[in-house]
Length: 248
Image (cartoon, rainbow, N blue to C red):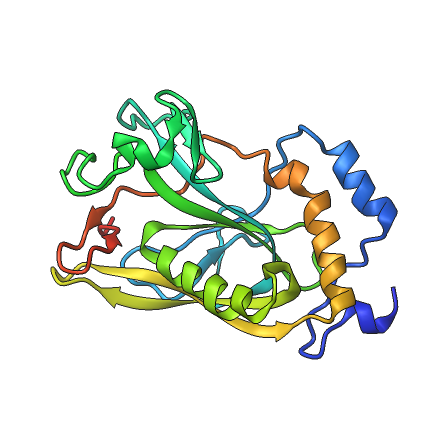
C-alpha cells in the first residue's frame, strides 16, 4: 500500500493487510479459538486500563486505548448455577441482543432473566449484559478485546449514535480513543466508566481497508470463548437506574 493509505494524519498506522493476508486469516483461522489479548477495566474507580505487556504476569497500565473498532457486538450471558471458581460456559447466551441460544433461549426482550429484579439481589438482571469491542491498535495485525460492562453501555451507545452513525460514519472508519472516568453513585460506590471520543476520521480508502479487515477476521472475533464474559455482578442505582459494579 502507498504511504497515504498506511499512515493517517495523526500517526495511526494501518497494517499492510493485502488481499492474500485477509483471505488467509478468513480461511486458515476459521473455527479456531485464537486467544486475543484482553484489556481490562479496573475496579474502584481506577483511571488506567490493564493492558497485556511482555510479561503475562505483570500487565501494563495505560490511561488510554487508541485504535479502530473493527468488530463489536452485544453479549448477553446467563448461568443457571452460581460461580464456583470454575470457568464454565453460560446456559444461555446471545450475541445480537435479540435471540438467546441455549436454556432458556428465545427472545431476549421477553426473557424474565433479562429484566431488572431477576438477579439474586433483587435489583440486577440474572442475565449479564455487556458489549465486546475488538480494537486494532496502530501498526498491529490482530485486535485487542475489551468487554464494556453495564456501567459504560450508555457511553458507548451515545458515542456510536451521536458521533458515528448520525454523522454518516462507521466505527471501522474512525480512530477511537477510550479513556476512564471515575464515577460515584448515590450510595458512595465508586466505579470506572469508559469514555469514548472520536480522534480522527479515516479517508474513504482507509475505511474500506479496515472494513475488509474486520470482515476477514470475524472467523476469530465471532468465535467467542463463552467461559470468558468479563462481566462482574452488578446492582442498580435506584435513583438513576444505572447498573453499578460493586467494589471488589
